[in-house]
Length: 316
Image (cartoon, rainbow, N blue to C red; front, side, top):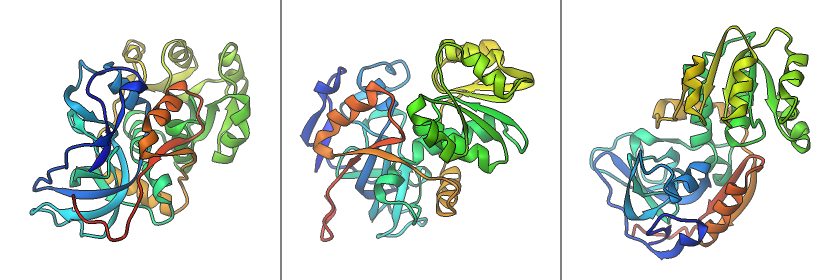
């Protein structure tokens, strides 16, 4: 099958398009014909070797953890899905090798949920990692509840935009940091935008003089410090970007594959609670450019790689 792979750590130039090994379908996995795969910052962090302390790399590595597609084959112990089902998945394994930037991926059922019918394949591909991250941080780490004031950083980005929508759905007031160009977008999601950078603390205090009940850090560094100082008494703090959050009494979070959580997100998308904005799409063979753009930062919503679809396609 065709796919993207890299045989050594490095920049986007190490990504190559060509033949990659066909996936083997385990007893509790399904074979998914990939329609789209979202690009996430973790993809290029892995490609550059920044996560080598966490994940063994079995080269050549096919990158990508997010997917939307159609089930075309079943492991012999799978009862949850049928051939023809449209699915989404956060297909992370505990090593780097068999990713979603390819024509097919073998995905364990514990990583999958049914695709929201209201989203395109491109939009749906952008939901798993970002949606699970936002949901697990807000629900399990920050325990956001009705009446809270929640500060969400990078509110126009992939994780941040879903976090704003979910927190509003939970009944919270949301203050979201974003560049001025994205303020209207954040308002459309239900958040109150503030410009990040120098003076951020004063701007947030102007909206929440007593401090915020929960802060969701997606940036780290000085942003984390500011967030900690903006907490109300008994305020909660979580970060997906900086382990120093623990020194402030907060929680350092890493998203987990969870089929039940992903199914909840799919239902919320169908109910119109969550939307996914796709800013750019690239064909599979241009995945290097997609990762390069993601690495530059400042993207509104998601960047997605698409795979051509043929209705008479057969298993590899």
